[in-house]
Length: 163
Image 1 (cartoon, rainbow, N blue to C red):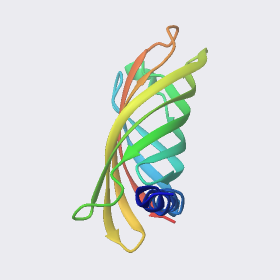
Image 2 (spheres, rainbow, N blue to C red):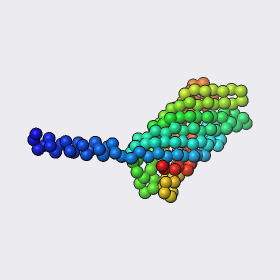
Image 3 (cartoon, helix red, strand yellow):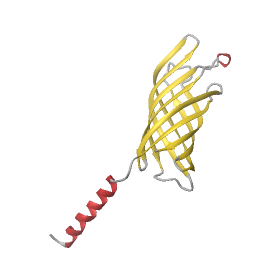
Image 4 (tube, rainbow, N blue to C red):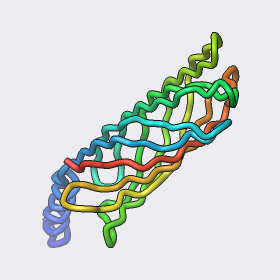
């Protein structure tokens, strides 16, 4: 065995150990915000996520009530998302990008539509104190073709607990 092979084996072992020994993180978010399509209405919900360095997954549920006077349907979403984020917060800010899909239910009066939807967005988690963070998020939802509003915009703020 030559000197280069003897050096390569420990270097590869250390690199593999470093990649596999990184601790996982989890977080829980409760949020409130606005669904702006087709009229401003309150949205509220929650999310739970787990990740490793820059990649994570999240399950989220949100509810927006209807507004019959604005012809704006209620909307329930249950989404599974992939999150790409900075591995650590910089000066207390941790930006992220997210995309995913799941089930939605839109209802207005007696009309109900349930189907598969997609969402894309991003935001930032702002360190407040210890494991408590403020989360600000913007999403665009693309709902099924029979939805009254096939593109929906949502913005929210929430309290995020890093576990």
